[in-house]
Image (cartoon, helix red, strand yellow):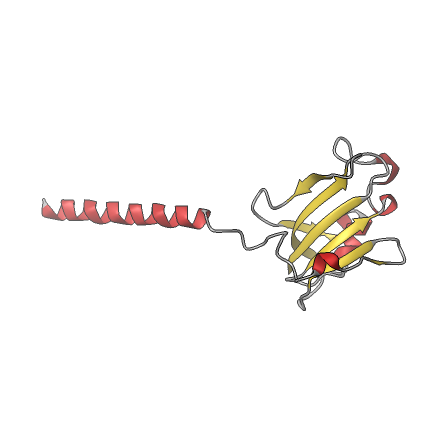
Length: 159
């Protein structure tokens, strides 16, 4: 009898420890944060490429960068400005809690161009003109025709 009581107590203690560890793990702050950037980064001016993409580095890093047919993991937030100039977020990986796997040839051209400038561990902000985004067709219902797109991208991993 004592053996079965002891086993039940050990099982219950193990179960409670597992639940506590799981709950504690679920409440930790996320590792990636769109607000975690180098000091003064938002005051830096945008640089414009020959294609018309505007970008600025928000967090410098020296890891690898995606190119060619690389797959890469990013956290990102994309928005447009509404008629009053307010930020209207149309997509973000932060709310789902895990990064997104992408390929350069499967995203809009401005996003692909900007990601190639961002190293693993870094963060870049992009202003993508319509011709490097969704163009005259837009991407209904979230993105109207001829919309300028804005992205904040954190490069997590290049495969």
